[in-house]
Image 1 (cartoon, each protein chain N blue to C red):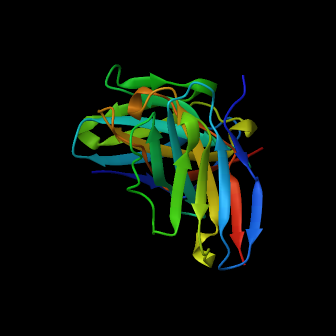
Image 2: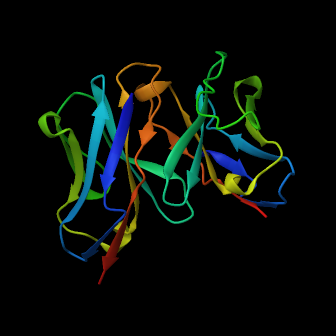
Length: 115
Length: 114
């Protein structure tokens, strides 16, 4: 079946502009995660959605970052007033169950470059 | 709180040689441990996971890892490297409760030479 998809695959934007990154999880997966992958820094957890519960936003680095998940499916990560340090690959993952119970399935990522 | 340390940002082996990627963890609660692999321009894929059953865990592509509580380690091994194993490998830790999220290490790039 279809895996996790993300769009766009690449995004180049000017400093100060807003960007939206999209994630389509695997159908039926209740949990959705966003991570940021910077060169040499591994994966940094950003935000996590589980069903209709309030999201865990503990990993968002600043109030310029926000995310929503509509209808328990598609998610959008928004970065306002982008800065050069926001340049990274943004990965989305979904799992059937929350936490360790479910293997996380990752999308291919969106490579964001802020010039 | 949990953390993961992967020793060596790059590991180079010859084809057919033993692969050993090191991972040490820190956790205030009994941990669940994972190894993920990332091939170029792709997302991460689960290799194997330890969830408090057998301490020796076998995964895909001939990889295995052993949970050693006394050493707080979860090293990844493969007896004989193949060219197709060249990728970045991430160790991750989670608490053993349903609300835990994964904390990843910084990754180790495995290079395989002919």
